[in-house]
Image (cartoon, rainbow, N blue to C red):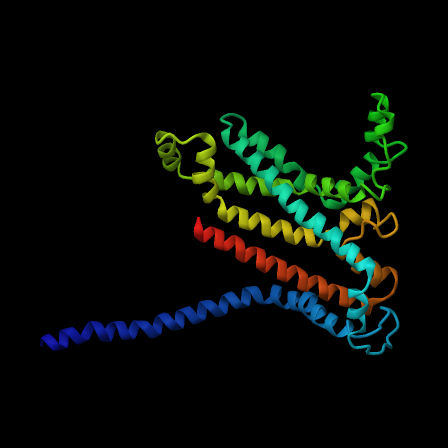
Length: 314
C-alpha cells in the first residue's frame, strides 16, 4: 500500500510533464507566428541584400548596367591602398570614438546634476532630451545656416561683438571642419545617453551611499567607489550605442559638407554612398561596405568585451 502511494505522485508528475511540454511547444509556435511577418521583411530587406553585397564586392558592377565582370579581390586591394579611404577611416575614428567619449562624459555630468535636483526635475529632463527628438537631418540643416560664413548667426554675432577675426568659414576650412562636425554630432546625440545614466543613478542603493558617508568618504570617493561601479552596465550600453552611431555617421556629413572641401570631411559611410551611387562604382562601394561592417563588428565586440569584464570586476 505504501509503495502504491509513493508511485502515484511520480505517475502524476510524469503525466504533467508531457502536457507542459506540449503547452510550451504550442506557445512557442504562436510566438513564432507573431514575429514571422517582421522576420520575413527583415530577411528580404536587410539580410538578403547584405549577403548579395558580398557577391557584388567581387565585381566591377556600375549599379545600372545589368552586365558586369568578376574582378576577384581587386576592389579590396584598391580600397586598402586608397588615400581617400584611409582619410575617411581617420575621420570616422575621430567622429565615432570622439563623440562616444565626449557625449558619455557630458551626459554623465548632466545626469549627476539632474539627480541632485529636488524640484522641477521632469522639466529639466525634458529640456535635456529635446535635442534627441530632432532628426539628424533637420539639426544639421539648422546648423548649416547658423554656420554660414556670410549670413550665419554665429559669424553675425561675432562681427556685431567686434570679433571680426574670429568669424570664419566653419564648414569650408580644411583645418577645422572635422572638429565642427564633431561638435554638432555631440550636441545632437546626448539626450538618450543622459537619461540612461540618470535612470541608473536613481537605482543606486542609498544605503551604500549613506554608509560610505558615515565611514568618512568624501563626495569624490563616494562616486569613485560606490556610484561609478554601479554604473558599469549603463556605461557599456551607452558606449556601445554611441560607437555604432559614430561608425555610421552619414546625414550630418551629407547636409553640412557633402564630404568637402574636396574629400576632407568624408566618413566611411559617406564614402560608401559617394562611390556607390555618386560615382557609379557599386562593386567598389559594396567592398567598402563589407570593410566597414568588419570594422564595426570587430571594434564593437572588443570594446563590449572589455566593458563587460569591467562589469564583472565591479
